[in-house]
Length: 307
Image (cartoon, rainbow, N blue to C red; front, top):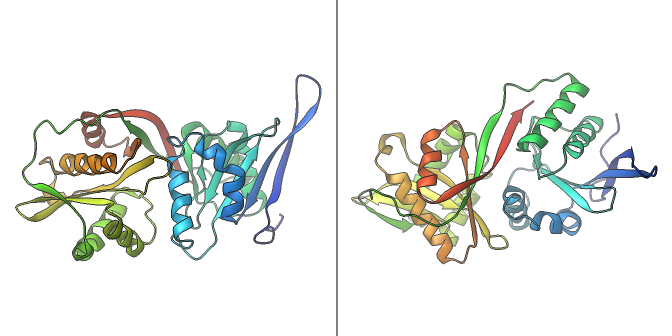
């Protein structure tokens, strides 16, 4: 199988010829690179054309712009898919050792991307993206490699805030922004959140640096004791996403998460965020119901498949 192209040079790695109704043959191409500026130049307009559905890719790109090795020492991999009319209709990125993250794209493009990864022998522990695209990638990967998905995958749902609704039954306590004195607490809570949810947060120390310096996280305190955390990602083109949200097991079921999330949402709106989003695990009916009570409305489902 072919090797990886020299670092720093965009490479058209796969071309699929298709027969159009006019009888002309046109090409559909994935181009990959490990240079973030090239990726943004080629795919940035496509991603920003739908900042809501591309929230994760855009926040990862923003994070890499600030901190190039936030996900590890291996260089990230970027790619974009060009349709027969010459426009970009799909994009992806991969931050090893984590699975490829897909944008909205035709199922054909997702299947072609699986062939790219197989052809270049790229590490592919799974795939994460819109349900149909992720399934198309996984099916083609299985056909090519014989490696079947490990189960049905994890389903998550993207929500958008329609209008913030305060909790019906306010919990006791008050919100405050995190500060440097909360570092030890966050070092305990963030790994617990990752272990419980499987969410990828990157380097925890750098995440805590951003939380404490940029006013991106809120703690709900009851009688001066922190009982729940709600953070958000930095704003990108008027869009931001709530997360992580974490309440220790001993403090659950008392309305603290609702208060923390509502407070973080209000802080984001006050900071000028126009599109406020969050993800939920579809297997957790409690959180899905909670966020809808706060005014978040379902928009799109995502699928994370292990391969």
